[in-house]
Image (cartoon, rainbow, N blue to C red; front, side, top):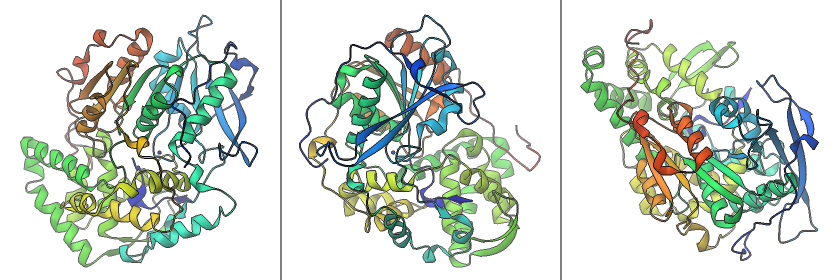
Length: 489
């Protein structure tokens, strides 16, 4: 079984001057029933699938062609709306079609009236995938300093010596999506983008505004911010967890001095990593694992992404401090079993679009914390040092200005895309509204009532009609897990 290193999991996904819009309207009527029937994982019904060929380099339209894979989850109603919901996957590096079952569940109300369109971004899924997973069993027995991420990236790079990796970027992704939209005959689409998908949504709104009826951007990552170094925001989210535990009589009684306990565990693992033999987190086969500070903080950071894992952290920290590593390994197995990220695409995007903008001052500020330090920033610096890069126009990183109806969503506890980023995006989106889930974390449509609000907005496109009480005054935090039997729930 293969997965990315823990430090990279749940990452948040052309040199020539580009035209102001890559949109092209089509007079054809949407008719996805002409596509082939197919089955997607964990969806029992037959849906519709297809592929089109696009230039790898749009400046060389007669050059190498690559496939773009897509699927349509047909609307339930026969009298459906003409404009589908287009899902922009996160990462960067997630494949939209591999998220189909989750999307179908979250947006079941939307699907009553609209098709849901899933397009694998170039470099993911079945769209010329740039897959470079690493063997986690080999990784997990190494000390942190022995995991050579630059070497790992170099080995990945060697697999794609005939691929122009500099063409796998956000703008070309939107060009591909536009080709699919035209192919299917949709005049306009509604966008949902979560995490990196929110940035893709903003790029779509800039590059093809005529094609977008509305946009829902969840866990917002504006184009003008740098994605990759996540130490600062992770530390802020963890501090909120510590505060809430102190303010909870049950949590504070069970886990007094939680912050000190965490610091002690981290220091102990920095000095003396712990070798243990346990059932493999994914296969259940006996395997050796070295519990290191890096692995410990990696699990902590990614577990902050969702309330159900977040609520376990005080208990996991306390048990780890007492030498019981089973709860930590349980979380690790869940983290490593999440949706696959296509590392080649992730690096192609971030190494040319974000890391060149990560100044020494930004990296130093991001690493100035007692939670995970500079681990995520350092990881991308190492990997990008060997990955092909191309300069991008400054215009790509200017604030996106648009009057397209846009719903912005943020979680107060988000460890990677803070509320402030949603506010930054809203400054130049004149027809937007920013809703914040008091107890929400990352991509809140998956664990709050935000999916209902998104569905209502897509239906009527009226931001003023949305009642966000279910995100704020009516919302309640999930209780902390206090012991192995689930005390506290």
